[in-house]
Length: 102
Image (cartoon, rainbow, N blue to C red; front, side, top):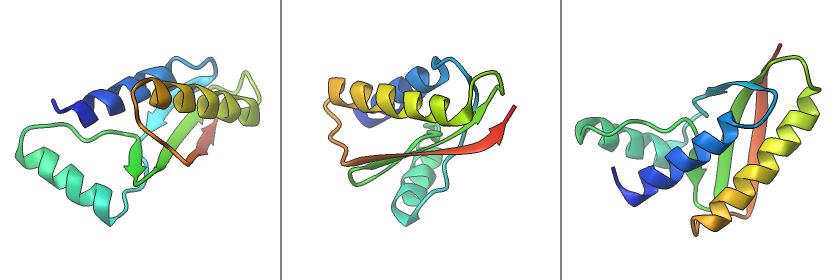
């Protein structure tokens, strides 16, 4: 597992730990992240569910319906931004999409 894979795995872990997150879905890949995913398949790596495109992180979640989805999305944004900074991953933006509520 590469360092990038380690960071993405750590980011996935913090997302799934946010109260109200029921599921973490694979974010839609861009050309760059799709190429990286294919390379990961050929080298035996796994494809991350969060996608980093340059300095933008994309996260797609499903919520449990107990907490309001906008509150959960804001919490995901905050913890991911903090975790990325802790791992030395500079981000200009974190896009959190709620794909399912409840």
